[in-house]
Length: 85
Image 1 (cartoon, helix red, strand yellow):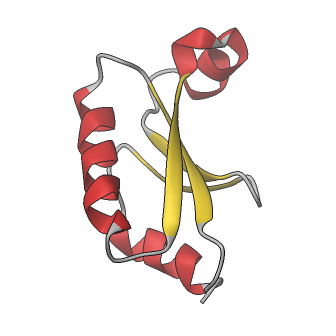
Image 2 (cartoon, one colour; image 1 turned 60 degrees about the vertical axis):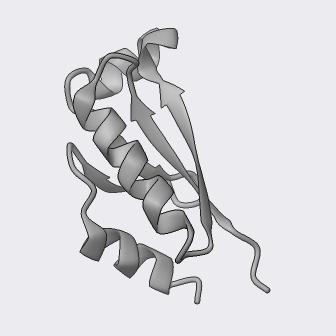
């Protein structure tokens, strides 16, 4: 079995779009081999400066590639994950 890919969701606590993306990723985890961690940008001024209102952002820590932002783009996520299948 392949090692699970870990993705990062940059967001903030009181963000409904962030919650929507996190919920969608949780639902997809049963089908795919990936994990994700959520990082609150408000804990780091550099992240606030980088992402500001452009959240949530789904990012690959392996390649530093932004997969999508605002909404979960299933096609972009599948395209990214297909590189590891």
